[in-house]
Image (cartoon, rainbow, N blue to C red):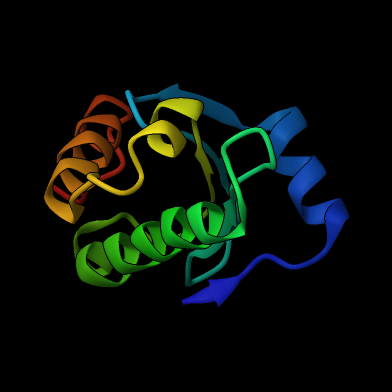
Length: 113
């Protein structure tokens, strides 16, 4: 997995990409014409303290690592944590997050056939 690091990369995806909502997260995606996917993980200060934000980002990374082979290649993704995730971060299980993001990916047709 390649990470998005530069602000310009994030801005390009925010401005020109598509977005899809779930209960705990929001995913921006844009075709990148590369042979691999790139990801960025965002949890703003509105979500909660540092412990909360890091846990949300860890859940996102784990989700991507686990389902990487099922996801279509050639996209940039930004996983953004929503306030709902921050409010429930102590009780939030990986399976709940996985189900939520799977629904987003299915709805956006980002899984391989």
